[in-house]
Image (cartoon, rainbow, N blue to C red; front, side):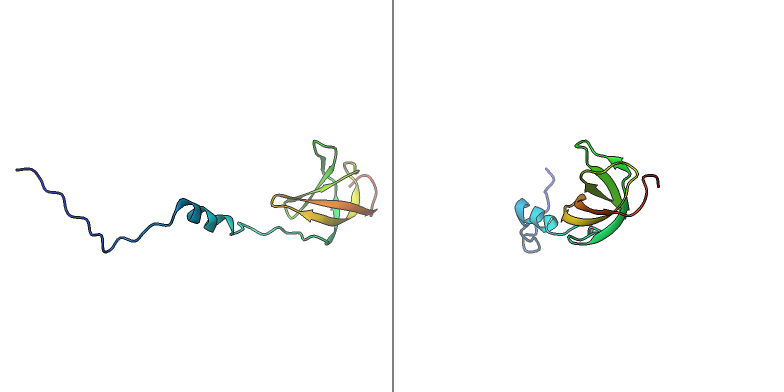
Length: 100
């Protein structure tokens, strides 16, 4: 005699949300917040130069791109744009010498 499979309990089963709904849930929740805000002024040191020639500074581990700068410059910058992984700033004035 063949084995009989147990019957499914359909009363306990709930309908699973669609894939789009599940993905939407996670897209709207930011994983972490950027440590800088647009309009904020910071004192930074240019550590590196990016592929497009912009200077790269770091603010709390967050990349800040500053156009028309050189490595080693100490600057006061104003954040203009904040993205998910980096920010773009404009140079306000130099605060120190060329060497850190």
